[in-house]
Length: 239
Image 1 (tube, rainbow, N blue to C red):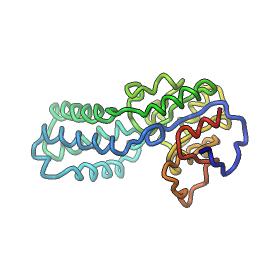
Image 2 (cartoon, one colour):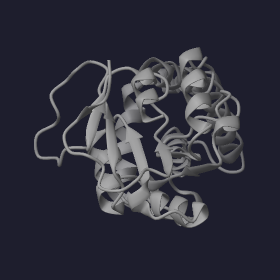
Image 3 (spheres, one colour):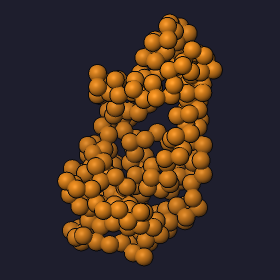
């Protein structure tokens, strides 16, 4: 297998930016489990919460997002506000509410990064890092040190830190460009989402590759990435 190009790179690639979730490891089951762990912790601390069910917290999530859309740019801040709203709805007051909020959040975070990154990911990153400086650019909150990815990256950018907005905004890629002292046009961004990753690359004037493991059709209404690939080791053709 190899990279399937829609259009060639217009400029030499001098650095590579990677999305994390669902690009370097599959994330869906991890998130599903972490949300269940969070709900279990809520019910342990507030038994009456069980009656509302787990879907109640998803409803609160979008209530918070609608009222304060700026919270969505930092998933950690967003989660804390959802927990605060939920605990308030069950009659929990301060200072107990803040203590419970932290306990529930910590339970979620512990489960959120409780997974093993495939060995192939480490192997490919190691080879790529011999030729290119690599940076991680994520909207998520997996602990990239705990899951073993930190040694392969010279920079880590998480939405919400230092005032950066989520992809598809170009903020994190622009920051990476400044820190690397490499123009965005020479930084290849790689990710699984046409809406966030590829659009962020376009907004920052970075070339991009779309990770398409299931050989899906590219989402309609979005500008194509420079190319796509289905297997992580396809990226070794960049060497």
